[in-house]
Length: 477
Ligand code: BES
Ligand code: MN
Ligand code: MN
Image 1 (cartoon, protein in one colour):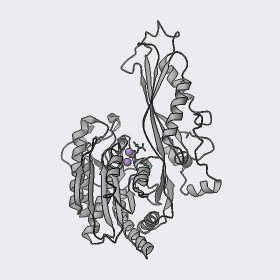
Image 2: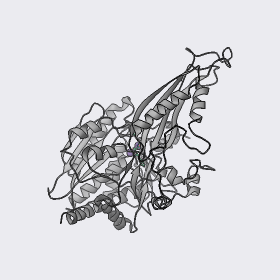
Image 3: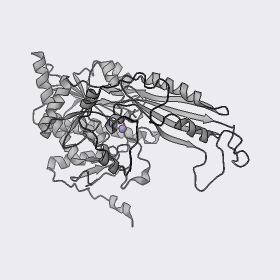
Image 4: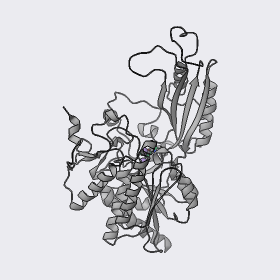
């Protein structure tokens, strides 16, 4: 059956919840943005990335921003726009990213990644939009543009606003730091607001108060000077792929602790009381397993699932290759084997120091008969935001008002390395008002974003502005 026909043609995806004319319009606009394949990692898509930047710039202008511009960098462009209404009001700087992860493995998508469709699922009974970037981060930063448009239209904008939407987040934000350093004055603000994380549970919302840092490495193990016949040479020389697997497997012990000497030295350990408060919204292991079709979870002993994915550092192989992986079989001992390895870091681990520890340890693991090279790709610091800041308090009140329940604080496991950079360079704290779910499959096939999450975001964001302006005024009084 030609399944793909479902996604061809001009037929508009039908939403599964009743939308107002305005909501339908907002959704149609998001669909247009999601159709642009702005894959920052792949140079074949450079034109599409630029097209997405232009699209975002136009969307900012039509929402009422002034001074909108697409700023070229040595990589992908940064989009800027602002709405300054009153110098006595606080300034909110909104950050987001219009670039997306590559969609592969493409064959695992139920519908093409850049042809958005709306479907209901068990998790999103009111419908979700399926497309690469739906949640990470096009659907999320776009909520801010639509929220601003509403506030301007209803004359309720309570703060000055600046937007900075970049196109290189998924590849390490290489050119953003320089831009920020060179434009400190233009980017002056009282708080940074980002929707690029999760909400935990759409009925019992969580505000993200922490992100992990990251150290991303690539290793190569080299054995003989050429690929060898595995019959003529097998059993006489070190096989780089076998050795690489041995080395990788030795990086964890039987308690799933990382064996790199010194790796845990700087890690902040929490008291049982602190662990309890951090774990306000514990993960239901049964549901977690079910969602992934697993019969068991695995992680560092002595920690809960939530702790394992937020408070504790981790090490994961992201890719491993070498030898023959084509059709059929080929008897060969490869000359080289490679792996990409990421470590998620927590306070107070320093990613440069951890990269060095990794490099030294990994090289020391190599037996005679192979050589090892190690390269650091990129890294970033972990981030924790205090709960007593004006920004956090404003977010808390906004969620409470919008959802009718008090939000909980949640440390998340992902990384947004520019968040600690903003604090260092601009001296501004970030508030992470994400509306995604772990099940939204970001970076995976069938990425999706709930319509309820999208519209709830558009509704909640203006409440943040209202409460932030009020707290700011109180603070000045
Ligand atoms: N939006 C994610 C980060 C995220 C998602 C944090 C969900 C918390 C919850 C971001 O786009 C991302 O994917 N970051 C990368 C890091 C980057 C250096 C490639 C990551 O976490 O792998
Ligand atoms: Mn993101
Ligand atoms: Mn991402």
